[in-house]
Image (cartoon, rainbow, N blue to C red; front, side, top):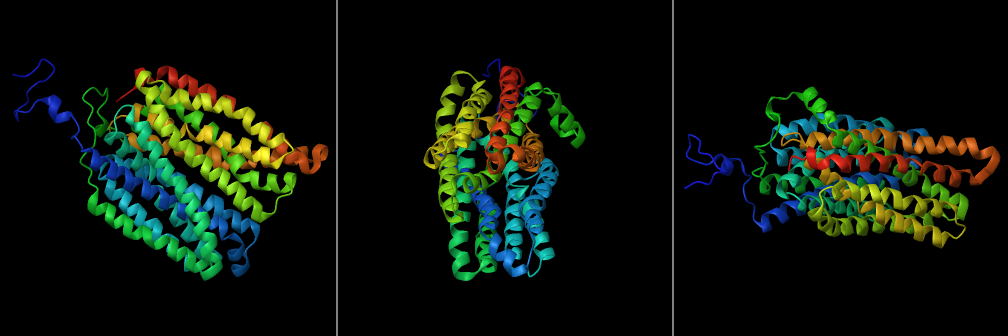
Length: 438
C-alpha cells in the first residue's frame, strides 16, 4: 500500500520514487568528489604555473611587460569568463562528466602547446585555449556535487573541491620553479600538462552522470527554458542577485590583494623576490587550504541548524577580515603583517564552500552549472578585471602625498568594498530559505 505522499503513474512506480535521485553509496560519492577535486587541482596548477615562468619566458621570447600582462591576465580571464556560461548551459542539459573530461583534456593539451610555443602569438593562443578549457570545469563540477551531496553536505563537498584548487596552486608554484631550473620553461609546460590528458580520460571511464537531481516541487520547467530565459529566471531571484553581487564585490577586494601584495611587501618591507615567493606563497597557499578545509567541516554544523548560514558565514567573514587586512597593510613589522594576512586569508577562505553551495541550493535542477558560471563571469570582470586596476589607480593618485608608501594606503582604502559585499550577502541570507530548490 502506498503512502499518501506517493502517487502511481502508468509504469507502476510512484512519482515520488521516480523523481528521487539514485541513492549513491558513500564510497562512490567520495570517489567522485576525489576525482573532481583532482581535476580542480590540475586546473589551478596549469593556470598558476605561468606565474613562476614569467622571467625565463620574457627573456627567451623577448617580451614586454604589456605582453606578459596579456598572457597572465586578459588572455585567460576574458575567455574563461565568456565561455563559462555557454559551456555550463551545455553541461546542465547533457552529460556533465563528459563535458568535464573533454575540458580537462583540452586545457591540458593547450598547456602542452604553451611549451611548444616559439613566439608570443603562439603562446597567447595557447593561453587562450587554457582559459576556454578550464571554463568547463568548475560550474559542471559544482552541479554534480550539488546533486551528490544534498542539504548541509553541499558545503562540505564544495569546500573539499575548492581545497583541491589550493593544492593545485601550491603544486604549480613549487613544481614550476623546480622544473624550470632543471629542464627549462617549455618542457615544464609539457610535463605539467600531460597528466591532465590521462586524468580526463580516466574520469570519462569511471564517473557517470547517474545522479542528476529532479525536483518535483520546482516552480518552473527547466527543460523548456532557453539560455536567455534561464539567465532571466536566475536574476529575478533576490537571493541569487544578492549572492552574485556579494561574491563579485568580495572578489574585487580579494584580487586587489592577490595582485598587489607582492609589490607591497617589496616596496614597504624591503623583501627580495625570493623571500616574497616563499613567504607570500606559503601564507596564501596554506591559509587558503586550511581555511577552506575548516569551512568544509564546520559550516555544515551551522547550516544544519539554520540554512541561512550557507550565505551568512561568508557575510560575517567579510566583515571580520577588514581590520585584519588593513592591519596587514599598515603595521611596520613584516612578521606581524604576514601573520595578519594568514588569519585573514584563513577566515575568508572558510566561507568559500558554503557560499558556492548556496548557488546550488537556489538554482533550479537544470540550471546549477549556469548559476555558477554567471557568478564566476561577474567575479572575473569585477575581481580580476577591475580590482587590481582600481588599487593601482588609487596608488598613483596618492603618490604625491605618500610616495612609495602610497600602495599600502590604496590597499587599505580598497577594503571598504568588503562592507558593500557583506551587505548583499546578508540580504541573500535573509531570503535563501524561500528561494531554496533543495
